[in-house]
Figure 1 (tube, rainbow, N blue to C red):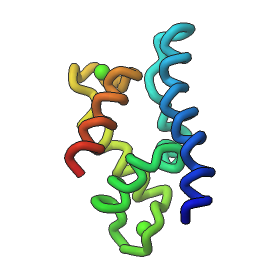
Figure 2: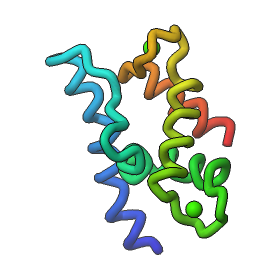
Figure 3: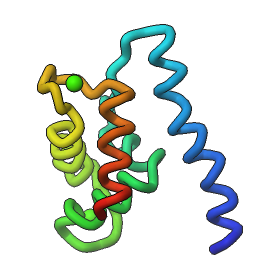
Length: 102
Ligand SMILES: [Ca+2]
Ligand SMILES: [Ca+2]
């Protein structure tokens, strides 16, 4: 388990840093397409949240359809100015919110 954490941590840091880089070159929104599941697979905070609230068949896996509903939910939560896009700032804020609350 500890080895797993050590392996995952750099990946999480890389994922957290990616939006910052994207922010400088393009006014990118956080992509959830074509595979909504990628959003959760690269961020354990979101994955834990998705498993808690969107794992409807309780198999401790997020299927693509479960990921879609979780991603929709996350978008609604994160898109605080309701422009239909989740900016890196909104993503970070929502992630921090999830981390603090759940
Ligand atoms: Ca499931
Ligand atoms: Ca927005």
